[in-house]
Image 1 (cartoon, rainbow, N blue to C red):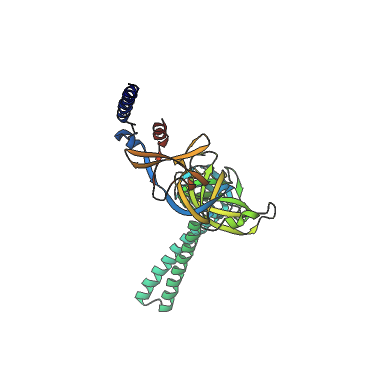
Image 2 (image 1 turned 135 degrees about the vertical axis):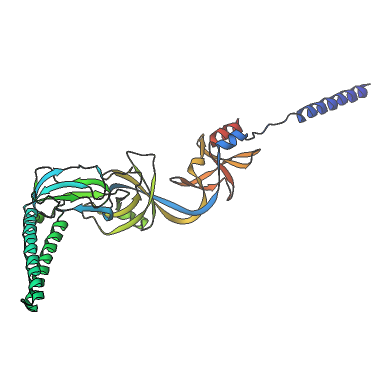
Length: 364
C-alpha cells in the first residue's frame, strides 16, 4: 500500500513537472526588431583598422593669406578729395576707392596741352613741306625733317599720356585729379587715408589693403617639446570662439625654421578654405594637429559610443532582427575617431546615429 502511494505521488510529480516545462516552453522572449521608420532614422558604419593617430592642441590666430592680398600705394602726391569705402566693405575690380587732387597730375595735363599744340604746329609744317616738295620748291631734306618733327611731337604726347594713365589720371584735365582703383574683387581689410589727408608718393605707406578672403592663414605656436609632433602636410581641425561647433579642416602648409626668441615657440602656418567667410582676420582659433602614431588599432566614430555606469558600449547591427549591445574598451579618442582595444572586430557594423534609442530598447 505504501509502495502504491509512493508510485502515485511520483507519477503526480512527473505529470506536474512535465506540464510546467511545457508551459514554460511556450513563453517566447521577444527580440527588438528595427521598423522601417527606425531604419530611416539610424546610420550604420563599419569598424575599420588603421594607424593610431595622435592629437596636439595649439592656439592660433587667423590672418590674411598674404598671397591673395593687394596693397595699394599712391602714384603721385596730393590731397584726398574723396574716400568712398571703409574697412570691411566689399569692392569690385575697377571700382574707384578714392579720388586724389595732385599737382603732379595737373602738371602732366599741362604738358599734354603743350604737346597737343606742338603736334598741331608740326602737322601744319609737314603739310606745307609736302606741298612745297610737290611743287619742287622744298627739298627732300626739308620734307624729311618736317616728318621727323611731327613724329617727335606724337611721341612726346604718347609718353605724357602713358604717365597720366599709369598714375590713374581721369579725363578732367583742368582738375588734375586721379583715381585710386581696386585691382581685384574683395574686401577692404586695411585703410590708412581719409578725406582731406595729404599724401606723398615717397612715404612708402599703402593707402588700402584688399583681400578676397576666400582662403586665410592660421598661425599657431608649437612649444619646443612638441616640435617632433608637427610636420608639413599634417591634417588639422580648426575651431573658433565665434563658431565652436563648426570644424574647418586644413593642412600645415609651412613650418618656420627658427624659434621665436621671446616665447621659444615654433610658428606653423595653416591654409584654410574660407568660401563662406566664417573666418575673420584677427580671430583666435583652436588648432588640433593630427599625426600618425605607432601601431594600428580598430577605430570607430566617436559619436557611436554610449556611456552607461562608467562603461562604454556600441550597438552592433547584424540585421534588422539581430542587434547586439557590445561593451568596448577604449584605447584613445582623437576628435571624431576613437580607437578600441576590444569589444568589436574589424568589419563589424555598428549604429552611429540614434543608437541610444536602439540601445534602450535592447537593454529594456
